[in-house]
Length: 515
Length: 114
Image 1 (tube, rainbow over the protein chains, first blue to last red):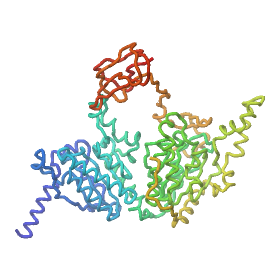
Image 2 (cartoon, one colour):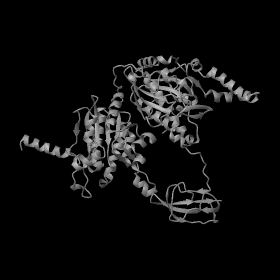
Image 3 (cartoon, chains in turn green, blue):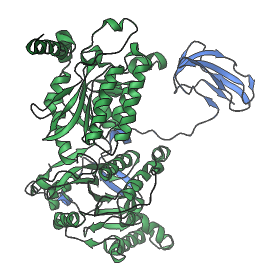
Image 4 (spheres, rainbow over the protein chains, first blue to last red):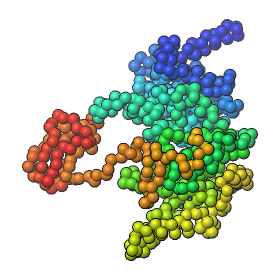
């Protein structure tokens, strides 16, 4: 055969492999509102940047007549490409080929591209759309999952790992996304669970739909397994592109600096939304937007544990991670879920050299039997652990109340914040004035002619003396009390001068965080 | 985005709820999950429940039977396994609420011991 003939043969082979599960299966995939694996990769990567690996890989199943079957690419596409001009490794399971089921060679393709990402020190994006293990391949399919989980763990904190759930992701398969940094879900398309509705019905007699059990909303609102929720696949890809603009390409780099932009101060004004009375609510995201570049804030875990807000923004072009109590929801308390959410985000930022900015406005930890019994002690400790452990620049702004254990936990001076600013509206105390006055002046209140009046008097007295930032400032626990309108200025200053911050910790294999 | 011209202290907060933390009432949104929480009820060892939903296979005791701690009360099938419920204490069976062959979930009391 001549070169030309050989090339024609190559094209023919490619054509065959590129058709995936064939037109019928593709039609079926489209009917459920889903894109095909190839369309997804093309939509996510920069135009014409996808380079496919292992198109000609074939499955290795021998039993149950599998040796007679041809599965193009063995149900998964892998390759490299660019996002926002930066290199990236990617894989997408192809549901049209044997339901995207994971066999030995399918897993081999995934682990190969993961190893590649680790060598090249670039992020890996995994698009999950699979019925699960390929039962016909038995233990080899389990081995495949195990190899993926192991690599997920080794890559954790070294390269960014992003999981996109665009179909079912069930059984052992969901542990790969769970081990990665960010999980994206799409309404009505994503389904994640360990045991599905059918097993639950036969074993336990309980009936539930896939959507109610592990649909996108459940994962984004109730469980916190998903970090980003989108209405459509297109919106989901936009979210991913935005996220990767805020994070560095690996743990030896810093996030890319962008041209500096001013906040949209016409739409977002601190004075406009911020009540000085600590009992009144406001949306802390408005404060974040009022001081961030272009008022652009990408919230992580937007729908879950809304009493704390975490996410990315830029200050003078530099990427920062915001952690802020949200007085709008549950008065901004720390509880089991919000501690979990904050702790994880802090550790992410620390692993990837993203400075942390903390806004404090909380009455403390949420009281309640359910919280205590749900282990708020060990979950709450995650925040303390994560902040203490973090060595990236840590900047804290105390907006209003900072009471008790909540004050300590929210990146206080004592957990080695590099800068602690307080607004003049800050109240730093062991507890709120009402509670404190009741304890300190118990006898005076009890013995008074009019106890109620005495209580009010003593509360007012306590408020005047302690409900301010100046007691803490007098001990040096607050570095500066600042005019709220100058917050952006001070934050940028703090970031600029801590650019080369280095903190050396004693050697250890790893710590034992409370999880 | 909220109306920025209005002073926050004068805003209408009537759509919010109050939560009490350390004797201070905070105006805020209380998520459904937190509103739905049931009052805490300590477990009564005299009330016998399955620890996992399943099918009752054998009931070893009847009303007014004397039982000793560790005696077999009920066997049931769940997760493809036969499971045993043993008496947590010495006592007398006050009442039995299930029959063999019935399905039982975790909220249904199976029997009570006096």
